[in-house]
Length: 270
Ligand SMILES: Cc1cc2nc3c(=O)[nH]c(=O)nc-3n(C[C@H](O)[C@H](O)[C@H](O)COP(=O)(O)OP(=O)(O)OC[C@H]3O[C@@H](n4cnc5c(N)ncnc54)[C@H](O)[C@@H]3O)c2cc1C
Ligand code: FES
Figure 1 (cartoon, rainbow, N blue to C red):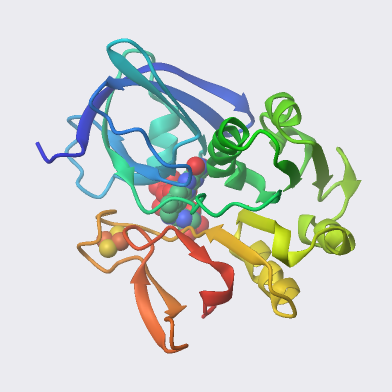
Figure 2 (cartoon, protein in one colour; figure 1 turned 120 degrees about the horizontal axis):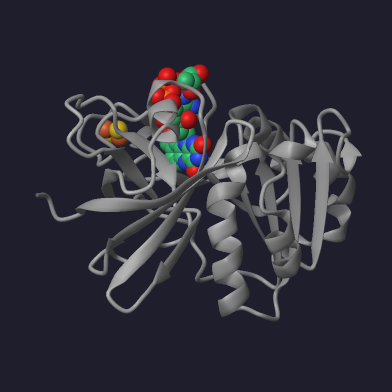
């Protein structure tokens, strides 16, 4: 078996909200500690369909005495994730990972802002947990937008970790009835580019809107991109995204291997 491929055992696969599942997987202790923002390619062990491997972010990770625990938070949207949703305790899954670059956290600034849209909270949650441990004095603010209150997942945990949590929903069933980008834009003057790091994950429309907000200023904003993936390991170019290189020229980079995290200012939306 290739270096990063593991067989994991499902300990729990629970529907935490409608169509949204939390899968807890026990895996060998040789699994590398993931960086926040990294993901796994997951498929059902022994299933004879090579195309049913799906990228899912690592939502939480812990190391025990002789094994590791990974949690994945995922929305059942199509064939692959619906099969995942039907898996019961004790089922085996094939896990390839951790994959991708993860968020850059070495040069994190005093103020840290997270902007999450829907299930985009999954990679940001691991990031928030990690930054809270490493930089306890940082001032962390979360903007979390979702379609409705039931899609606001993990709020208790997030409220314990962040100084301020701003919730908004499309239908107004929790927090402000507004788009998360608009709520953040109203607050933008509270943050200075030189002492604020911004991390975002959510639907493409949310990231495009953020790109417009940041086009007029110098904020460092890293975003995790979602792209359909085939191999997940950089071999097929199936997940190419248009990115500006250091000289401003357009290059195609692989979301799975060069990303999924990129600086928002470098992304060319096609
Ligand atoms: C790096 C990365 C991390 C991700 N992390 C998570 C996560 O933590 N939780 C989660 O719920 N989802 C996550 N996704 C999205 C997830 O991979 C897709 O929802 C999943 O692959 C859909 O597979 P499917 O067979 O169920 O759906 P399909 O039947 O293949 O497609 C159903 C719908 O989902 C869209 N879709 C399919 N693949 C993707 C994709 N890779 N990205 C975005 N939309 C897609 C299709 O266009 C279609 O509208 C992540 C994607 C990437 C690239
Ligand atoms: S999915 Fe094959 S290169 Fe990214």
